[in-house]
Length: 253
Image (cartoon, rainbow, N blue to C red; front, side, top):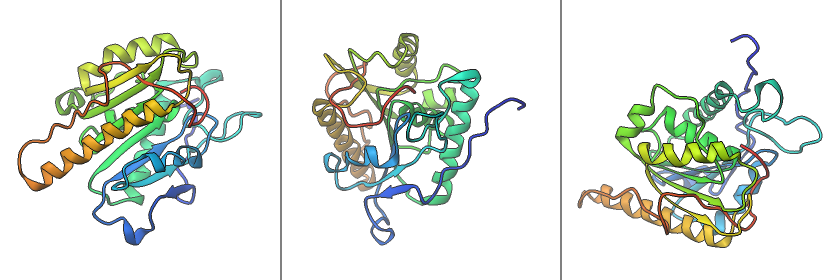
């Protein structure tokens, strides 16, 4: 489309893995997507807090923000293309291309912070049956409708949403839309963390760990064929969104 910003492919070289190729086979993959102005090694610092059963891959967003903002971004948040739904979808499609070419994992979960969480949720919307779950930390659902949203509402994958009560980075209208939209399309769990700004806290990481442990338990149950797995896995609280502390990349999504 004329005038639409070009989103380049993700760089296979700009990925941090928790395990070498020889140790990845047969294990679930958890992909980390950083926020605006950050980089792939930022969220990789969360690995010690995550279940060791996962192979973790932290990817780098494909765009360089305008000077003087450091790091990388998934889509523009300034100028003519600011938070344009087309750019959000194209960035998510680029991420899906990376998934297609760089991993053959059968079970894939997503964890994003801020703008990275927007891409994680957009990828889940584009391919609802591709991903086992998503963790949305201080992000939101893009307001533009997608033709696959009806399928997502049928599949209803588990999603954890954590956000801070004092997060002033994500616009209020996007939070309101996400509050209304997510429960109608996914099995939602999460918390709003009092006093938390646009960041991640130890309380939130604890809740994320509980959520991820429940996804692993559901996976094990499904693989054993010993009954249906409850993929919804709440991590303390319901329906809202989390956030706390400080462990991930910068600003808006």
